[in-house]
Length: 434
Image 1 (cartoon, rainbow, N blue to C red):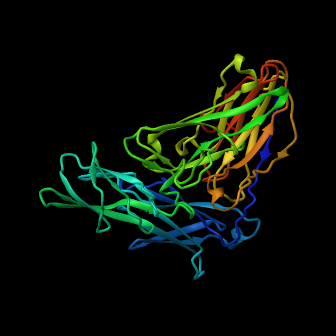
Image 2 (image 1 turned 135 degrees about the vertical axis):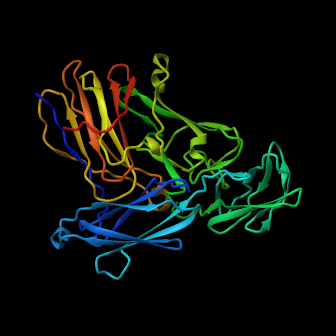
């Protein structure tokens, strides 16, 4: 027979009847990418209109039949193309039906994707830079002066490129102007984005990169588990991340948030057994390289551990099932499924275990997280399921999906009861649930 386990994981935050949730596709738009707004409304949408007034996109939803608005609350997806935007900061305002008030707003930043006469890195700069130096690549241009928002910078030096300390500035996009040795003035609009690192981050500027486990803990059969991670900045400029996952004691900011050019750091993870996200600026995140390994230090002679993927946003799953194939449930192993999701809302997750000998009843498991304040921006909602053992050499396929437009990921750990060696089964492909 067949083993089918459906697991419902519900978020603890539900949407009120009048709420609208807005996400973007792509989540980090540039001046070359058409944007589609994804709206989740209680009432099914009959039609919509889009009106662009300056930097404000006004979307009006005309709901369908009134009985579709009654409880229980469901979130109906409406896809609204809003076009291509030049670099800048924008706001979406959504109204629904005859209501005069705005049901939801969403701000976003569009980065300039066209190459200019010069380039500046990094793009994302904290409002209080604390000595962060910016790199200006001007090609063959000879640079005499640099101005950030019409204020001339000090301490302009040359070392393979032009370097200068980022000045403090209020949050938002800022133009940079260069005066060449020939007296020419070149301006790059929206060259830098200043963010406040003590306020919530903008997901159009930053992305989450998931470290599924960063911990040090004892386990079954006298095992002693540690996670060992490494981060490398592969580029010749500084990269400043929104947060820090390195467990060093920090006295003065910045600590692990700032990566020097062509530098790397290795550390033993701690404090996040259910995962944590490094929040990195888009456009810079791909220049960071990662490694993560878990190993049993009580049995170092038997192996050096198992690689665990560090999951970039593009490798997470949205609006589709995750598929884990050929997962052993042999009684000689302990098998645990771990699920991670970002964002919030009340969306069920169903896990189907397909291919075993018998049927198990429906299980309900909740996604949880323990955090407070700004820390929650980096903490995923997490749930886990211990799979019951089957027969020797028995294997199953796993399918599960997290609610609409919610970045999700998961994996199964298979631990040998005798040796404590771990095998990781990761998802690949979407669909497949029967």
